[in-house]
Structure formats: C-alpha cells, structure tokens
Image 1: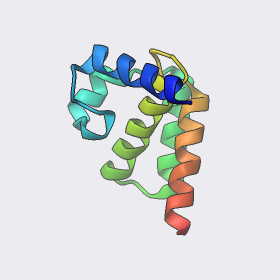
Image 2: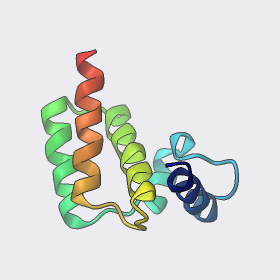
Image 3: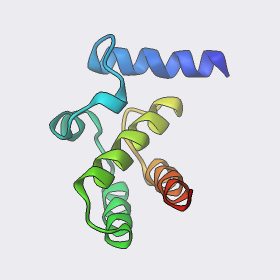
Length: 95
C-alpha cells in the first residue's frame, strides 16, 4: 500500500511539480491537469445536477477524481474515477 501511494505521489509531482498536491489545485489548474474522458465529463455533469450546482462541489469531485486516477496509474480521468469520487462526496454529505 505504501508503494502504491508513493507511486501516485511521484506521478502527481511529475505533472504538477513537487509540493503541489491535487487538493491545492485551482479550477484553472484542474482544467489543464485533470483531463477527463467524455464519459467522465457526462457523469460529472449528471452528479452535479443531482447534488446541486456548486462550483466548490464540482472542483472537489474533480480533485478527488484526479487523485483516484493517480492511484490507478492513469493520466486521464475515467468514468470509474468520477463515480468513485462522487460516492465519497455522497458519504461526506451524509456524515
């Protein structure tokens, strides 16, 4: 597990520079660094429509999706990454 997390951090550092975690990315940075498949964008749009249109929620889901993709060793965010991030968001809202 430690090696898996270290690999994701290395991927993130190569893409964004050292010391810039996904959690600190601005909306503009997410636009360029969190590339999504068309299906992932559609799913994100559906999720935001159901959760309520909030820019903060939109960016939070994109940040978490980017991290999940990093852990999965992927450069692009897929529907599966967005679906997992949305599930975490739903859990967060229930707590």
